[in-house]
Length: 370
Image (cartoon, rainbow, N blue to C red; front, side, top):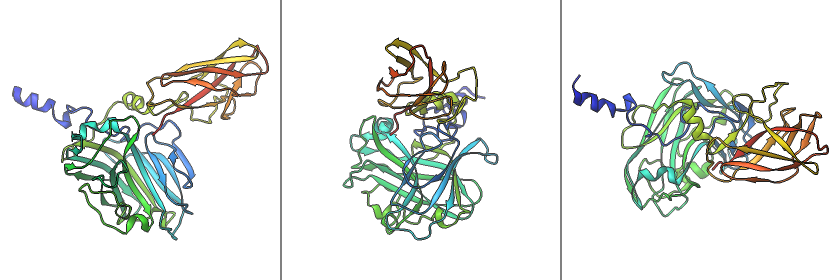
């Protein structure tokens, strides 16, 4: 092989030479700190299972679904997917209903897309998907909320029962803005259900002003039958007009990226609300230090610098009760009754307890999601 060929191959996607080109974190669905499955969903927005994958719900719908991290055995290079399964059908669709798998970006993470302060380079979204039957999934990118700018593009993707890779290439655009912020700026959306508020318009892969009627034109409804499911993995957003091979990375790297937004100290041992089942290895638990006057202080550090000041929730290893710690010395739970100082690096603070000699232990959840 010539030296020129070796140098060229070092920069090829197939050789993993173009690292950090995928601007989506956890696109292979490998990390799921909160839970591997959550059912009875459909009444509220939220992050329920796979990290960075949010479910966005519109007006109240009778439809309900399960969201799960699912093993993949028939798609080369991938071992996990996110699977949305209908558990309660809803065929009477109100205008404002929607069900969307939603990836939220910090504005600072997309600065490489900019060619000027108000112009974007061409970029490409790609992903793998399948369904239980023929199903029209609408993929959408939407920048900010300014309807006067060229901020939205979408396309219909015809899913079958077999895995396919879909690509959505967006040409360079002017009059488009991405703010350099650590807050929510841009959304990548995968529409699975929508009412007429979002479906009466048309599709376009060229960025245009955001009009609700265009956003999910042509979408099928996952709530049409309790047999319906949609499965997605390998989500990638990259600069350029061509989809390159999916950029895989080691689990530890992906986990650290996800922990910027959400951290659970017991991950790998249990999920929030889980117990230690009498274990004595105390994996992921933090312990209190008695400081007198029936006060106990907890200190803990986070493995990465969080995106923002997190909301904290403590869980008792005894029975998984939230807003509680386990009284390791005396048994049972102690309510966490005082405020804690928090930073993007860790926590410190105190809790009241009735017995000064007790030792408390807990799992901690830190949420700094977009």
